[in-house]
Image (cartoon, rainbow, N blue to C red; front, side):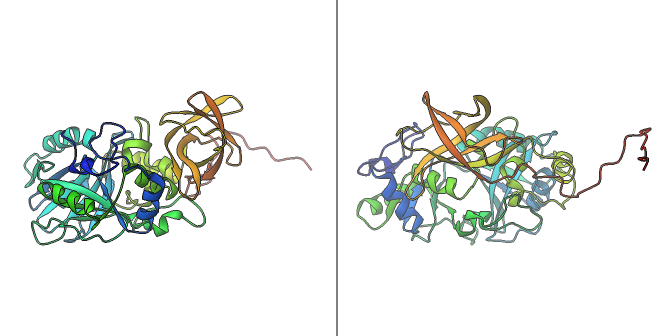
Length: 370
């Protein structure tokens, strides 16, 4: 993929080779601008797929975790594609415009998802296509003046539902949730308009922030992302993703049995936490850094950042049995860094139905002699 026009702006740095700016020289200032709803983030490295045809909503409804049949033009949602054991395969952001359902995904997932969807069409009236060459994604927490695409009349804007529990969802996190103030959206613009948008940013008409700024604010909002928080073992409960991407009352879809069983009767084997890292050593853990307790591994860091208000923070996935009050240790490039937990998914998450445990068949219950 060729680099974005935003990389021509002063100070723009592509840290990981993604083709978009990670920052423009002032990551903390960029966070402040983004948090104040003043900035835009170039996400043009991400992919855009589409599903056209009258069966598009009912079809994807039967394949994924969210209830989609009632989605109206201009509305957005998110859904998960699971395997037969309930593990995450894809996470998809959705925009419905009345004629076409638009799917926003990270580029590494696009080809596999497109191929799988195409193989599941059978005789249904749906057409699946990759529209990445025509449309690019811009992220923001505000309402910037952008040339948002609207090929069928409805502007193609994905509004992140993370600010509240969606109908049919369930939140494991307790107390005040930092996601309440999360107003993130992703806007599709014609890809050939990127150069003019970058030019407007260069002239000062638009303010820009890099992806590092967006990541830092996302960590603080406890917002999971498939590309960073998920691995081959992840189930939605571990990331508190039942909050916005799963409808617990909808009909059968692949992986639903695991979703229901863990939620009603069991516990997720791992849980998402936010870590407040000791910054005295001046080092930050990389993605995949080991998290330990008393010298024993209990999890891994999924993403870390230096937040403009909270200091060094991270999201991590740890074993369910890890004591919630324990101070953990993170391996930051060989330096042990103490980390305090902020609980997102509590150890007791799950078992929502409170079904009493029955004695085993043939077990004998003895009365005490008194």
